[in-house]
Image 1 (cartoon, one colour):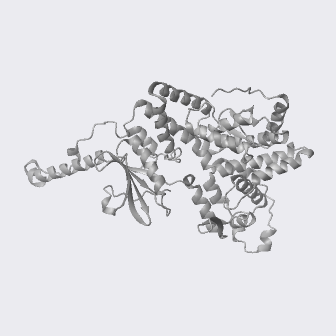
Image 2: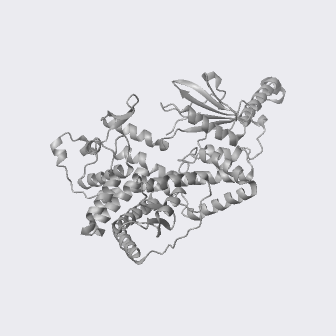
Image 3: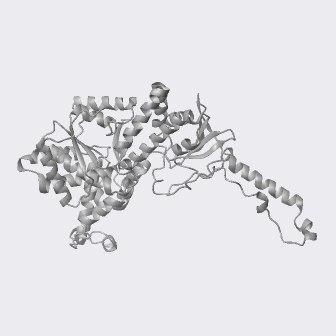
Length: 516
């Protein structure tokens, strides 16, 4: 796709940009240069379908996403107000048909996102030149399509995109293993040097260190080494894509395509890890900038209408904009008034707590600190309070199967918090590990699901195994728990099978890895 529009803003919007940017910086926001592009609704839907990168590699799923966005806009069901790209410089898109007050709101919102992208720790590893890298990725995939055929490349991209969440989102901050693989054919130390030998006189050595005993010990060490050589990885690995890149029997172009999908998955991962914080931070600042600096009197009604629509909550569905902005506001209020710490938590006088105000005025610096070091899980785990849940009317919902609707399950704080954190851990997806790349000594792949009380959806698990098997080219197995019993789900490239197994049936006998 070529970009058919001029990135130069018309004079009125260029003036607005300078005004809103000055307001944002006056509040202490720190961001890369931001380039706004004015596009029509259809262009914006197309850009959004590509994840914000119009030069991305071609794939049918982007067209499907475009049709969905287009129909939603035409029928009045949805509208994209803003889109901003984590890049240096940042790229943001404005819809040509928006009113002036909407353009102001979008610009203020965008600068909040840009500040978050630049300063939040979970975005620190991401490429700041991703617009260029995406164009490079697209060029390489198109070259492979020209050389190997569009159908073959598209089929392989389908498989890769279907398992692009099988990565280790925390590996960017935690060193899981040495950079150099142990499969580099280094010379092994002679096993005889490790044999148990006792000091003795020459004439007594045959009796103190019998040859038969040393030979048996040496044979045992060799047998153990052969088991290690046959069984890899040495420890369970969560980055399944990296394992496939390193060890699957792929052609060079396939390995490159899988690497492209993995790189992009790691680029987008922090956006899933910080959805509530990121949208809450941008909403906090568009609200602050608009109501305190940028809003004209005649714009108040339109602004209030659009802002309230963005913040609307619905039963059984979490609005990250609303939850994020309200929790940032609550943190600012608490740190301004001193409603935190041991003395506050131990106070049991309700009247005293209602009137509690130490006038510390630490709120603004605190929310900037929170923006820098937290993700959604730690954000809610650290700052969600019973008082906040009551004030915001947060409940725990459950699906009522007979009536096919959602009902209030609990108003208990711990239940609400547990549900929220559970839904956010690993983006709500299961943890899958590679535990054996030579299962049954036949080159088969054994995966393990870290069971946390929720059964896998076996139909989706079978589909995932089919895609992994197509890349691994040998049968693939997944060890999990279903209805309280250990189950081995397998796919041989044609059929998916499922059987209950006992602990003794697992040759690796690994205990399920735990996430810290």
